[in-house]
Image 1 (tube, helix red, strand yellow):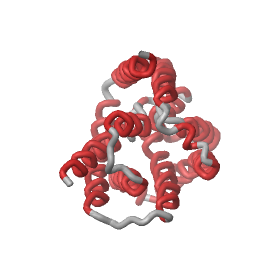
Image 2 (image 1 turned 120 degrees about the vertical axis):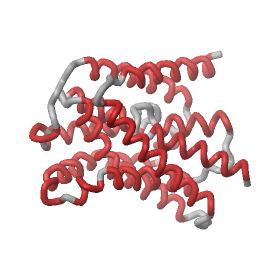
Image 3 (image 1 turned 180 degrees about the horizontal axis):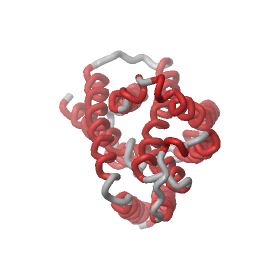
Image 4 (image 1 turned 90 degrees about the vertical axis):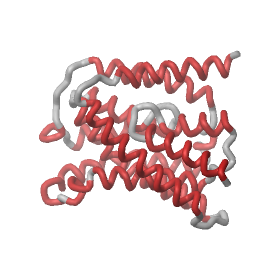
Length: 256
């Protein structure tokens, strides 16, 4: 029992911190599960971890989400921008293509490196566009198309959407905000697909599921809060360096 709780704590920390940072939560969860051979992880635990993150981001942006009168246009754009990944995610999941991508350290290593470098290039320029009034239907659709790449472990949903927003000249804070708001439909869609796959299995709401939801929520909430404060003062270089280090470690493991 103690070992299961420790595993859930580790998975919650990994999910909560990496989901909203540009470092890829799917890659980190895959790495942890492969390297440490966790026994506690299951589809329902995955659903619980993502549910915790989803509740955290909804709670953090509750004012914007509840203020429909003043933010109706923004919410409409976020819904439109989420359509590409919802469609692509359903296709990849229903066709089984997702199984070819998961638990593949070579894919994770290369995507972590390549998209880390792309993030660095996009973040170099000092752009200062803000969401209002510059975010429009065309731009959000392009960012939504970029987000499809996040289905590949190692790309990072947060990383690729921030990269795309920076390419379209939004400042770091608003690029991150766009990324976070796009995360709501994306995480919700992923959770629904995971739950659909888990329904065929026998499961029960036990203490591990409740712990994973609670801890994932806490770590996700404080990660969002920290990141938005950090991004107001600093560049994304620290995350680029981190991605390069992780990719080098993975290359050493794979090719030696």
